[in-house]
Length: 131
Image (cartoon, rainbow, N blue to C red):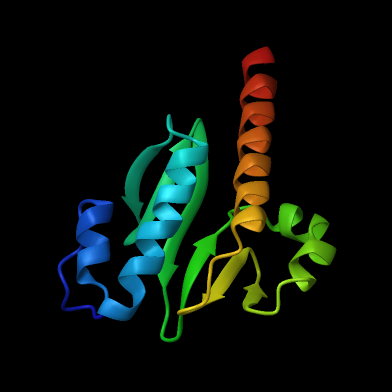
């Protein structure tokens, strides 16, 4: 993102600021996340769109050549290595998944990740409430 670009206040603003080639994928990824977790709140954190359910759930963004989903759980992606390797049109770096533009998003993989993150957040919430 260009540092001269105003900091977006909403996910709509963020998407509108991105090059045309990224907007459809970002919009679709947002819809998938909100469809799975309608109670998640949308926010901008560190200049990128994030979804919060009890705690930060996942985020999304762009880089030079792809759209990305920030999973925010390196252990989860480590657990899912075999599933991730089955998808040739994604790249994984740390706890971020980069999607190749103009190719269909791996819906089942995204669903699996988002629902696993919901479970992680709910477990953490229950553990903290016991203290």
